[in-house]
Image: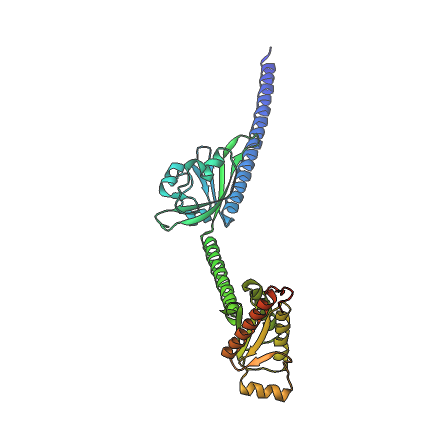
Length: 338
């Protein structure tokens, strides 16, 4: 082979090597470019992730499978006072905080802390826990939810915990509950007072055996008369009353409407076989009744409660005598002894 031919071969080989080198350089440049693009995409995604994490108003804590905290947003730092990501291991922050149930007394079992449950693969929803630290010795109540983090193949990568401080909300709820209890107690007190006033406004007195007295005070309107009638009828049946004295000494106004209400009460009582007497009509009231032309019909009216009681006693004695005569055996004289 001549020198020229060897030179040509060498030149061809050099050209081939240069082409291969150029191709490798181009491929390497493309790989570097793709790598730089991947790094840029990863950096952008990381920035988006960090920005999203920091923009969440609730506290967010991310840990690895060992429970070591890897990411913490500003809300979590503000609420819990956590340190720099990747520095605080689970054991460390557990030593700094006391975990209790919402009652603030019962300790929260370590294995039940939402972070540990999520690391084990257990989801946690709206768990309430009270957390105490040197910065918050009085404690704060957190509402916590947690989930396990998995990769595309389903392998566990760690856990994420989201929590919020609900101390003020729970305080307001306690205050509202206390207000509801106080309001219920006030309502019960008012109801007892209402019943007491009702009973005091319609006092049924058993002044003698079978003799009941009802002193009326104030205004006797339609609603009041219905209450008086109901109470009086129940008392007549329960106390076996034979006579009733309606004393109107405390009634300020006795007009046509009031008289009509009283007569309705008297008629209802008499339907039960009980006799009624009206006492305590004052002179001024009597004058008003005459001017209005009000008549109580056959209803006996007496000066005061004392006279009413005497009248009832006379009726009672007369009824007893009549009952004795009716019960006496009939005696027939033998023939020839008239």
